[in-house]
Structure formats: C-alpha cells, structure tokens
Image 1 (cartoon, each protein chain N blue to C red):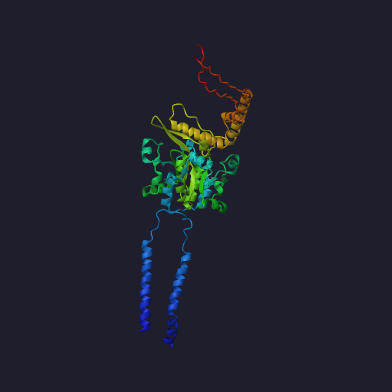
Image 2 (cartoon, rainbow over the protein chains, first blue to last red; image 1 turned 90 degrees about the vertical axis):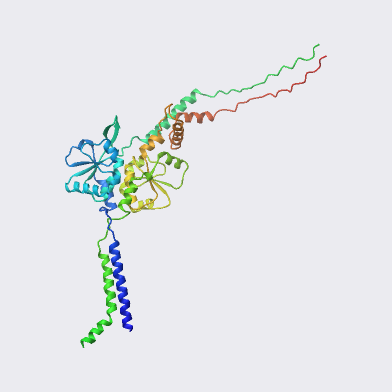
Length: 206
Length: 219
C-alpha cells in the first residue's frame, strides 16, 4: 500500500516535470535579432576603425549606397543608385534580407542621411548586429530649388576656439571701457537749484 | 542472490533519480552563453535611438547651469586635449574610449543625477548614449548640437534683425545674459559698471517754498 502511494506520487511529479519542460520549450521564442557584438567590442570598433567615406570615393563599385531617410524624403531626391532603408525599418524582414545580400556579395553598405548625426543610430545598430561591412558617407543633404544638394562635412569639427573668443571679448571690452572712461570723466557738478520765490501778490495799494 | 542485489540497488532508486536530475541541471552551465547579447532588446534599442527624447537644448542647459540645478551632471566625451582647452562649467571628462571603464560606470549608471553627455557636435555624444542605453543606463541626455551649438547660441548669440518677432529679441536677451554669466564680456557691460561706480549723488538743494502769505492790507 505504502509502495503504491509512493509510485503514484512519483508519477504525478514526473508528469508535472515533463509538462513544465514542454511549456518552457514551446513558449521560448528566440528573439529575431540578436546582438552579435557586445558593447566593449562595439566601442572599440567605433574608436579605432575608420568608417567614414567622403563623397569623392563613392565611385568605388564595392559601395552600395543606402539612404536611411524616410520614404518621402527618398522619393523627393536621392543619390544615384541608392536604395532606401529607413532607420525605423532597419530590423524588418525585407531589409534584413537586403542587408544579408549585401554581405553575401561582399560589398560595403554606405549609409547616408540628412547629416551624419542622423545615420549614427542606424550605423551603430547594424554594427551591434554584427554587420562589419557598414560605413558612413559623411555628407550633408539639403535642398535648393527642389534639387538635392550633397556636400561633404567634417565630423565633430570644432567651429571656434571658445576659450580664445571669451578671452578676446574680455580684452576688447576692457579696452573699450578704458577708452570710454578717459573720455567720460564725470564732472563734479553740484546742482543747486534754488527755487525762485514766487512773487508775492501785490500788497496794499489803494 | 540476484534478486537480493537488485533489491539492494532498488533501495537507492530515489537517490539515483535525484542524482540524474542534479547532473542534468549541472548541464545547464555548459549551455552556450549569450554573452554577446547583453542589454535591452534590439527592437527596444532601435525605438530609443529614433526617439529625440534624449536631446536637451543649449538654452535649456544654460538655464539649468545658471540656476545651479544640483541634479545635473555634465560629461564631456571628447578627448582630454579638447577638454582642457575648453569645456562647459563643472564638466567631467570621460573620453569615448574610456566610456565602459569601471570608473566611468559610477557616473553613468546611477539614478541620482541627470547626466548630460556632450561633444563638439552630438555625433560622439550620441554614440556614447546609444552604447549606454543598450546597457540600460538611465537618466542620460545628449546636448543637441554639442559645444558648437553652445558657441553659436550661448557664447556668441546672433543679434536678431529688426524685423524679427519679439520672441527672438527676448531669446537674444536671455542668451546674452547667459553668455555674460559664462564669462563673455561686452563693452557696454563695462560701461554700465563704470558708470555706476563714480556718480556722486547730486546735491539738490531744494528750498522750501514759503507759504503764500495771504494778501495783506488793502484798503
């Protein structure tokens, strides 16, 4: 009797155990996109590798231009032979296929957008996903008379020496102030206003 | 004889079963680790990257600095040379290369301060932000336009043209005042300072009017 109860308990526990494993296996969904590069490796890549390409070099047949702006912008005007992969859609199945195809052909995807800052997100995302053949085209796109104008830009170039500017302004201001001080020596004038006595109304008189 | 041996082994059957389970559990350790897949989900990271929420404008930051908001911590991600040349007031230097060092984590991965990352533009600051966001660090912001924008708007604000709306002039006044706070001097600033110091109080002697005497006399 005792033995029977034990067996029962074991079979119940066993069934439960198997059931839990089954549920776990069935409910486990492998994420579609996994990072293939960890943060430290990504950081190392972005500080060591040279991933900027300037406009003069795009003639290289190895490069495939990828426009990361949205579709409306892309249709309004884009570089020759560029394909459109919007940053927001970069993880979609179609785009993954396109990117994988580029990898298979051993070409380099050259990302560009309104400016390099805009491409940054897409570039880092792809780098983290393990695409090593991604570069940034360091250009700025603007419109003039509905014509797309593409210019080279320098990344993170300081536009001014701020410290020098501040020092200069202080010097200049002091100089100006001194010059003005000389001219304007405040005269020591004492203003004494003495009110006139009002004429007393005519007195008397006959 | 055989039966006895079998019975002996069977006596340990639960132990044996438990042992097998423990060994199986130990096998989990040997499973391939997803070490590379650290941090938040890729889809989540992408939507964070697209969102402009992380940006703080230079005007906003200047306002915070002038009011000496204690909850803001500035981090300069440029290299040491640029940092020594010029940086925003009270900023800490964490070059991009040292972003994931242990010392840096202390500043980046905390919930106490609102951290503002900046570089010359916002390109490198964005990269730093994206790397940190993947590791799920909170309270990080990026200075929109970086030091260059800081120079254009706060340090050297452009005087609005006559035709511009009143808001432009208000903004200019604010920016000019802010630039004075951050060390820029204007000629008229000195003028007013010097003008104020020497003026001696005018001595104005007022002689009290005599009350009109009522007309006297008369016949």
